[in-house]
Length: 271
Image (tube, rainbow, N blue to C red):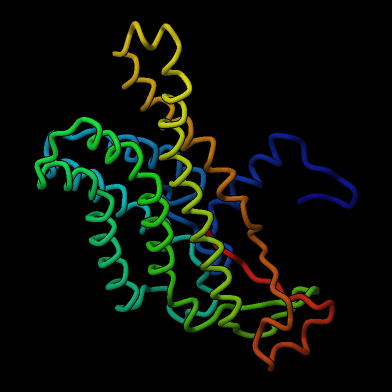
């Protein structure tokens, strides 16, 4: 316990930060190790790189996409806003939505590989477009729709909103919709940018003598830049919108507007 005026040293501050990131903001439950924000990079990065490999078989592409999308769905569920939920157990609707999201995202994420092998694409130019250009908008769209679907219950039932003094005001569907949309946009930015980084880097380096003489370096550079881009984008994505979200009183339900003394209500966005 700290006495009045006593400050934490660096090691204690790190310990407090770690403990806070290990606990769910709404329920207070300890998050499983694999779905804590601190573990997101170490678990996701290998799956992201593996999912972007030019697999020789559609089955392998589907398999790695399944692993990636399963983890992303589990992470989204674990870090959602659960303030309106009476039970700590997932509802049957949430389970069905999650299973459907994994199936849809697995097929959608594997679409470039499916098109190449099932349509018998032989042109190297078309293959390059399908493997390097198509994944950019596709990854962003899949990430956005996945988060929006998995957390759709928040938009329908609402989430808890608070006034500037931290007092509970009630449940707001408008705040739930805003929280889900912001999280979906941040995840789309993460995966869309990650998919774009290797293509941009290779394009910039293509004219250099080193790359022209040693084209074998292209593949390692592509996947190294993919992993580095993903790692650098995670903190940017997580902080793109504040965890303590705000919504103007004119945008919430009428029965909640009077409680917004300073014109704003506050909510937990989730990840």
